[in-house]
Amino acid sequence: MPYLSLSVDLEGRDPTAAEDACFAAGALAVTLTDAVDDAILEPAPGELRLWPRTVLQVLFDADTAGSAAVLQLATVLALPTSAIRVERIEDKVWEREWLKDFHSMRFGRRLWIVPRHEEPPAQAEAVVVRLDPGLAFGTGTHPSTALCLTWLDNHLLAGQRVIDYGCGSGVLAIAAARLGAAQVDCYDIDPQAAIATRDNAADNAVASQLVLHETPQTLPRDADVLVANIISGILCELQPHFRTLLRPGARLVLAGILEEQVASVIEAYRPWITLAPWAQREGWSALSGQRGADA
Image (cartoon, rainbow, N blue to C red):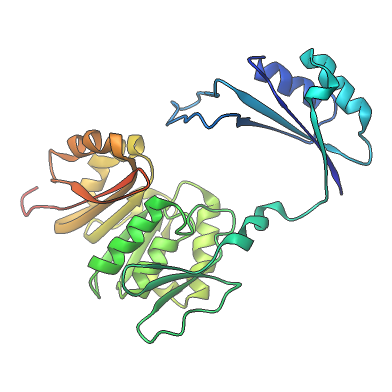
């Protein structure tokens, strides 16, 4: 089915009223995006925080909508029709389109993330993770994920037991298994993550090494390494729980932290572990530390 895409800069108009009017006019989807790249960081639960300048993008069925949809949107927003950008879009499997730009990447000395549509590198020492993220987060393209993958390549020891908290596509868990972890326990709040992780683990022949948990309460309490690539606020909330999951001497790796948030995360974990920045990339930091014998 082809679509008619209408987009307009709201210029301070009420986005909720505009969205409601679009659906009333038969819109199939409405998206609000940033007009000028103003960052919005970690809104509170249930909070809808928008940008100072917001662009409204609306999709209609092109076979049933036409100039009338443009005129109706212009009327609702009290704008001339010339202010509305109109584009006809042919139907595609949109959640797969971006994979065309997803290519093989190396992390550290030997770890490679390779999409299913590419051939793995012809290197004897290469440790390859074949990946299809599905609808879950995690490909290695985000700086936080890249930092975690590089840490695993540099520091993970064969035979260790790993927890991947917030596993997304399973990329960190599978990388750990491919690097020699004896067992990797995975948890994510998103049910799509379990599907993607299970499928990717099977594709990489490490399904027997991965254990998927439906709740965080069933995670083991004697892990050698815990990796969590989430956001700083959630990481701070989880610190008491993470303390119960790591044996003395175990390593903790945290990512998803902006450089200006590093101090607050370090302070949250100070009661039982000393964390320090391990590496930074594009404004993001990864922290790591080792739990003491009596922590």
